[in-house]
Length: 174
Length: 177
Image (cartoon, rainbow over all chains, first blue to last red):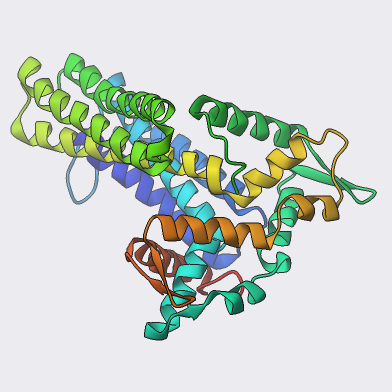
């Protein structure tokens, strides 16, 4: 019970802090800020538990006793933090597949003429915002009209290319 | 809880997740024609089977109170599901993310690319064509007389879930609103 309740309490605390901060002001670099919020909440939360051995309010649950329990809480917290970060990245920008499905649903029983939809979905909507994101997130730089990857971008490309090779993916993707 | 039981319980979701990843990679490499999505589902099922085999044995090897045993089983199931969810999305990023595709296009051009060259490689038409094929292939949309209708509602549910989250965080349902 200790692992489940303390992990959930830490994760929910970080989530509430994030929602509170987002209501005050939307961060410029949202994913990075989200990661910082979850890191700080975790470090301070664990330090607080270690220093004061508190009892969890409402449930009356005592603090973890063993290293294994702390590591278990760490695993739970970061598994959920990463799942939240990944979900958030899908919330932050509209997925074309989800937009398409919703547009088709809104067209009702008559269905949607895909040609009309294609005309409304342009490079300005689907591709250019993602190109601008690369610059904004310092994954690429724009110099004299040429886009080039930064070292961060090169690292990301190597990670994804390695896994694509491991899986043997041939499709160019996207 | 006994310390050894704690260590054993900690390793169960990690071991199950490793089983999930290994099976998914081996299955997809040996049977790519069966599709990536199927390999992801099968990997998850294999990891879940490992989890269901290991978790009760934790209680047998290291006796714990029923409340402890149940709560740790719930915690481990949640951890396994969260790790699998992350892995599922990581694979999908490798295949479908627009940003990753752009990064990979730039990676193979050490001298960089102009915007026109980027759009020559990858543009809105490519984005739509790939997604229409995927949605038709998985039955999420169906074609009738040149018009498209919603088929299986799984993607639609995901879309509405995303809209709800967008309202919670941003107070609007789309980045284009």
